[in-house]
Length: 118
Ligand SMILES: [Zn+2]
Image 1 (cartoon, rainbow, N blue to C red):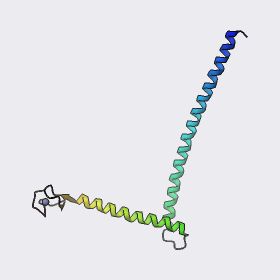
Image 2 (image 1 turned 45 degrees about the vertical axis):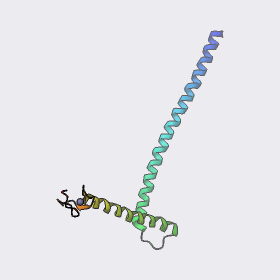
Image 3 (image 1 turned 90 degrees about the vertical axis):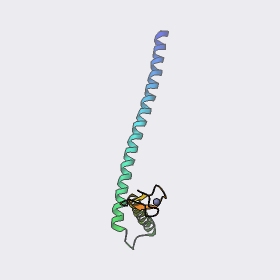
Image 4 (image 1 turned 135 degrees about the horizontal axis):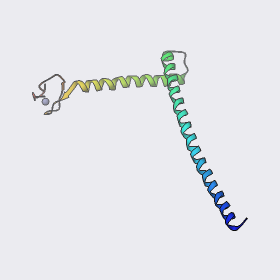
């Protein structure tokens, strides 16, 4: 093998090594995306399972403490969410007076506090 051919072979080997490395990186990225997709699906299934368990067992007195703690947390969150949504509804039904800032029913034409036109 002449010098030119040896150099060409070395260059090709170097190129192949880089290509192999690039393919490995792309392969790892694809696998990471696949792993993330599977993890996402698994999380959704766990959530569905949790909701099914909650719907069926929320009032079960025989559950262990660990279950009761999580179930009580969900119940508290549900109450908190209902309270927040009630406040949102309340805010939607009222209008603040541009003059004094008092809350007035959405249907009022004049402020109940200062008489300003709403
Ligand atoms: Zn007012």
